[in-house]
Length: 83
Image (tube, rainbow, N blue to C red; front, top):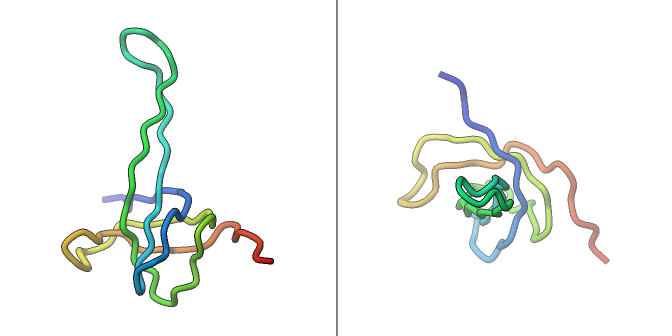
């Protein structure tokens, strides 16, 4: 079985060892054809608390780590510049 991977944007890093990653899916409406944006938010395990809001990250599905956390960060693709 293939491991599910997604790429998304970190929208919250307020929790310890957990970030919230938003993934946008753009698809045409079945009847009207207009492009509709749907956003799915995942709670993702971040062991070292390295992710910050605005980072683009790759996440991978894993065993359940808590009630709502079933994903983990595999890599930070591009970190948001901090000034």
